Length: 570
Ligand SMILES: CC(=O)SCCNC(=O)CCNC(=O)[C@H](O)C(C)(C)COP(=O)(O)OP(=O)(O)OC[C@H]1O[C@@H](n2cnc3c(N)ncnc32)[C@H](O)[C@@H]1OP(=O)(O)O
Ligand SMILES: CC(C)C(=O)C(=O)O
Ligand SMILES: [Mg+2]
Image 1 (cartoon, rainbow, N blue to C red):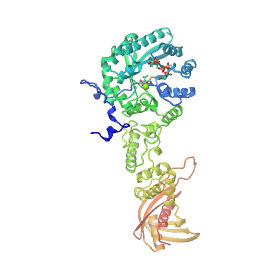
Image 2 (image 1 turned 135 degrees about the vertical axis):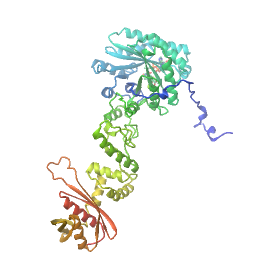
Image 3 (image 1 turned 90 degrees about the vertical axis):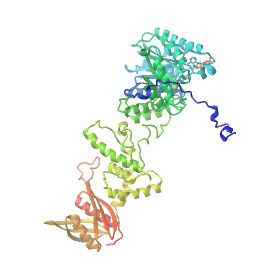
Image 4 (image 1 turned 180 degrees about the horizontal axis):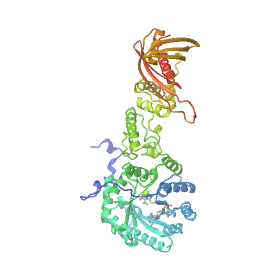
């Protein structure tokens, strides 16, 4: 019986076949952990570059190279010099202008073709140390359909390539050479055959423990779940000849979205080295993203041996060199990856951050345990502004956090409850994010700048025993009037005086005050204080605040501002 799916030509799963997992009863990698960083090799300037709409210009390449050096890469694939004059010239520039630090080894890629290998050696003339990376495709599909060659013929191509590399390197002894071989499309290659080819190349190069060869096992196209890749790597790790003289390197792509996962599982399976690019630019869906993998390692308390703390520079450089924007949700680097808009997340982040701040005062290495934030955003130069952001999904905690961080306004909880709906209504109406300036303006308009509130002109206070006697002069609409009252404390006396004046009982429900941080850049400026009050008149509650150099005036003005919000007229 035909189904809708089988009738459709354009979306027909029947033309695909499941990837056959390899049988591996002795699988060990699931029980391993990554407790040391692998050796990293950046291929931004080669695999990343060859995938761009417009390959990098010489100045972009140099900018990228400098970034890679500063981040801490010790091995950098700088190009495919036989491909084009700009690729060749860039390698020459690095060598002739002595731009390669002593502890950095450059690497170039070449096909297993004599003229291309010769051109690549020419490009590397005068290099102190270098890796010559030669590849040929070994997969069934490539053998049968692209090269139309038998297994033996493809193996012979690899071995011949290895011999050319060996012999041409011997002719340039001033350079300390390392050799790298990639059975390209390794994951689509029968394992016994991939092993046979790699062993053949190793046999030509005769590595030693002191001069190892690199066998790079690429997932040129990601075709399986990452566990299958890990099985393949573990199998190669167990069976390759002269393992002690070989660095097993991984080079994964991201076709199924698991390039990082495959590389991580491959390291569990015994690999020593990882090739990838910063933020994952590369062929099709990209190369394995080294930023993500290194940060994953970092987040487990292991030194990734790359310094990614200047994430803004990494993003800016990658974007300007590749002309590709970093996705706002890109792991660790995206603009939104540490941002919390939703109220419950903000609440949890706030509470955990408060505890973390205390913990960190005592121990800089205290365990980072902040809900919703797998790592401390400050490690990557991110600020709290990028963490707590306000829109219609936010709650009182987030709004309070923004006012506190940007304006030093530490709203008490009862006022947060009162204030939150004002922001909610604004966010719903504007249908946009509400910035901290707008939040502050709404706070001032709501609580500080009541047009109908009288202003304190002056006051006199006398204390006898426990009783304060207060006379205060108020102004409203250019008219002045006096009020007076007695109470236990200034505020009590003031509230009684005002109640008597208006003929309604005012009940002071809540009161908080604190000093405000001095404004940035202001010198010798008198510190200001803020007072927050909640009063009740005729069963209705009103909140307000006031800011003043004198806390007594601030507290009385806050009561007046709250009073100004009610409908009762003096
Ligand atoms: C998975 C990867 O990323 S591999 C790296 C891929 N990167 C690039 O290709 C970018 C740089 N490449 C180039 O600029 C060009 O391909 C060049 C200059 C290297 C070669 O260009 P051309 O000589 O025109 O050959 P072309 O690229 O079409 O290659 C196809 C030929 O090379 C052969 N070939 C391809 N790869 C290899 C290899 N690794 N080893 C030996 N021969 C190879 C093919 O069988 C084919 O041979 P044929 O012409 O006899 O059919
Ligand atoms: C040249 C090789 C390593 C490559 O880029 C790939 O297979 O993806
Ligand atoms: Mg690749």
